[in-house]
Length: 497
Image (cartoon, rainbow, N blue to C red; front, side, top):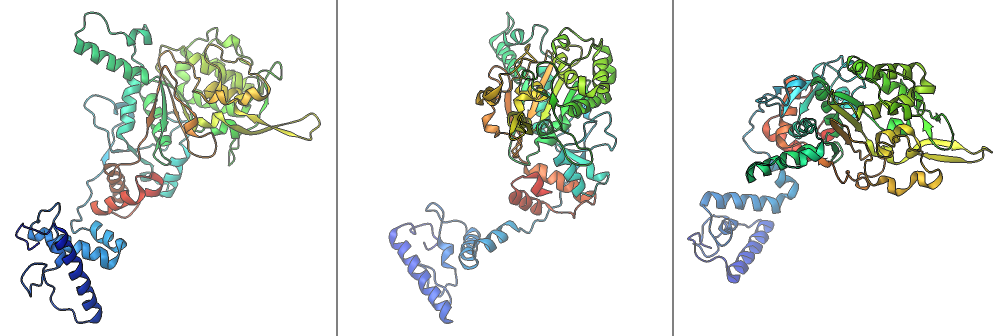
């Protein structure tokens, strides 16, 4: 313990150390404290006794001894809060690197393009790219940042780019489908066969993807950017920015949400959502009118109740919009089924807050005597069944069993969405109270994967803070303050904002 590298690890040295510490504390309180003495050293040395404490029985360098002594004394004297503040506040206040502008969405996954941690400015006119509108978390962020052009900057994250690559691999599966992709061709070496199987596994996992993650980890923003990227690359994308609108309606300047009995037997098909369905059809026409005009209607539409007669998918949508109550819901159900068979274009079906499709809806049905109200479960809504709680293809509009079977727990087993012939189905799970817990929903057993969207990492926080500071949205921060903000928020996007 004398700094020479010998001793200091035995029980005698530890007891002497504690005794000297207590003595020095008493002398300090009495105001008679003199120069501190080193345990086992020369009398009169004004060296802090904590400096003699090594790590693992070894004596550290003299400058490290004094640093450790200063830290330990400060922790005991000032408490943990002041100690943590001193440890975090270093003297190296390095400025943040400038945020990089992101390329156009069509180039995000192009070879040789690095769009990770770059900031993309959403255009104000999204009538063609995202006519459905931006998700609520992103709208709140834009409003909090002043609703200027600079406030529309969003971060292109590395997990999102990886998901885009997985979806792009899924839509490139061979004509034989999944069975042909899962078997390696004959004549390959073991290494080539393993690489082929790994690529096939990645492609098949991209057919059904569930986005999960902690609250405010960026799932909704990632799904909106995914739709934006897909449409920029020639995909047909059917986007539901908030599935709770189907089951709970929407309040505000443009309210939505009423249900009506489906055509036919009023106890078999369940309930239509005419105004919600009509809005979905208008968004599809705004985003893909040219593509829908090229795609003919197949025989699957004939089996959907309430679907009008049409020759093309564009005509199917337009007739549903014109006759909202009679045909809107049937047109959406038929359109969802038809998109599952399209091979001319890659198809993306994206649903946000998808677990809202598995809970009780906000609608009720009065009894014949009008003295009781029966809650309507989401499985009784035709739109909810078409996008998550329905039967597996080809039984798209199979009547459900009335009564308790409509809300049976077995319906929470998996996402019973039909495969798309070329493309992917992506859903984002919410942790709000609008739906069942994400833990109760499992990915499909044969195909699909649950992708965890991590919270913002330190480089991502630095990129956002650097952009906000340069754009005048917030004050400029340095690297040390960015580190503290990342630690305080744990990468929570809403708290960081």
